[in-house]
Image (cartoon, rainbow, N blue to C red; front, side, top):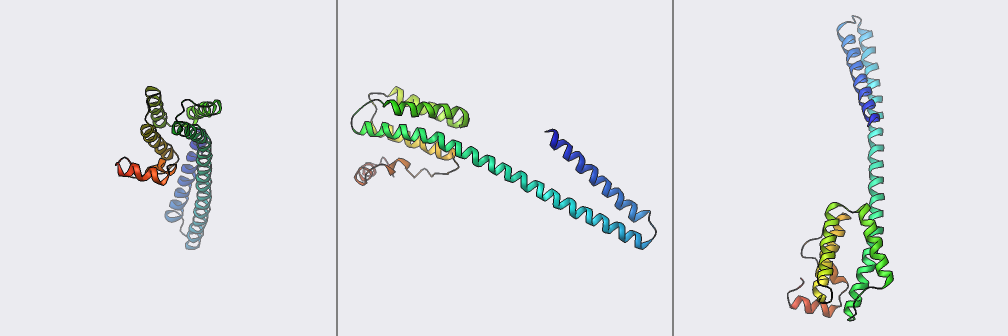
Length: 191
């Protein structure tokens, strides 16, 4: 903050100095050769100033991109924990079993911890909605509702990573067999 303010004050000072120098050279210097020299000096200073400013702006943008990439990598690590736990849950439901293994519970706990640090407000709200639906329907959860709610939440995770999924794409159909996809498509449950 202070560094930005100082750099802006310095730029304004240099700009006013150059304008004053230019104004003095044009209106108060009588010798044509001196006017040309002053204009040349101003042109060189402006070129150098522009070069330094361009490098400074590019460095700032590079640091911002590096920071955004770091955040994206951290989010990917956090979301990996959700995927591990969620896919185990899906396979257990598919086998007719309930509950999660200790490892899957630990993965979900790591996801929640990471979500507190790296998740946006919107994603945290979507997770709370998703988790509430899971808890409310525990034991009577239909496989398709678990699948559909998971698909919606995974789309939110992908949005957080910068992907834009259309409403026609069913991300979770990747884990379905060809027969299961055809059966759900015939019932009009997926597209």
